[in-house]
Amino acid sequence: MKNLLLLTLLLCNTAFAYSSNVINGYAVAMLDHRMVEENIQAKRKTDKDYNGYCFSKVYLFGKLFHEKPKVKIGNSQGHIIKEQLIIKNGIAIGKEYIFQHMTVTKGYLELSYSGKVLDTKVFVK
Image (cartoon, rainbow, N blue to C red; front, side, top):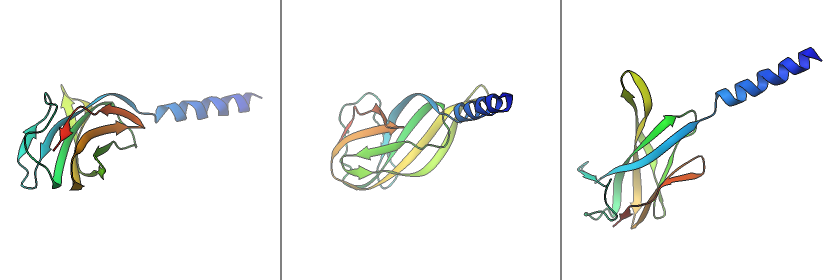
């Protein structure tokens, strides 16, 4: 009986030890095919047209584990090309991701993590 109780506690602790705790996520910038950056933090609509091939930069804050964020622009699914830690006072507080989008026409930029939508405010032309 003791062994069963200890085994159950051990399994519960390891299951919760590997969970993610994302506090927030933001779409920060759009980059064109020449990597020229446009800040989209306080915008509802992009200034440039990003038809075809572009990149998006997003920040996620919190404790991230194995799961990766997903970014869509309209019907175009983004693919992670760069991932970098965000460090403040020697402590990792989040990650910066750059996504590559191949077939962008137009639509809202949607950032999601673990099925939860974190940011959808910017319309990409």
